[in-house]
Image 1: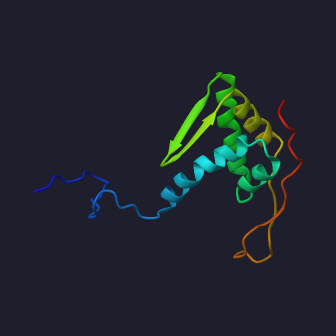
Image 2: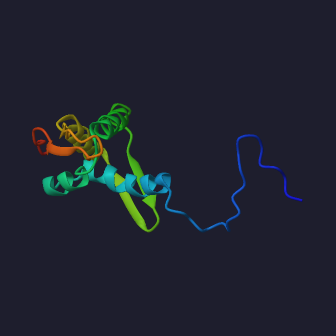
Image 3: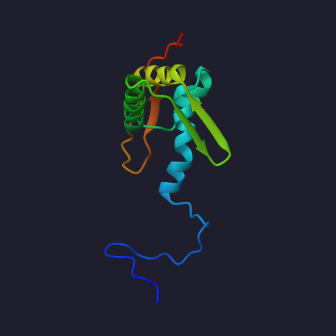
Length: 128
């Protein structure tokens, strides 16, 4: 007889290795590309990466990379078969990109309508 999973937890009767597309899995799958997009040298790729994020994501990403920059940290991120390296320059670009990006949205009178993006704010400068 299997052990009880404990209070507040439930056992999932699904074989290991089978992943459902839960909101958490989707977010985890998108996170590496988003982080890479903030560190991207190419302005067009940067804009593409942040196209669907809101101001909370920009603010949180800025804080994350700012802590890394202040600590002199670098990072390597491996997800599946993809491998990203975030050196000192990439982290500085990410901080600069997040600092110079403001997501402005326009709310519709219809409460069920999604917000409409107005602008990304001022463009970021290339990091030298």
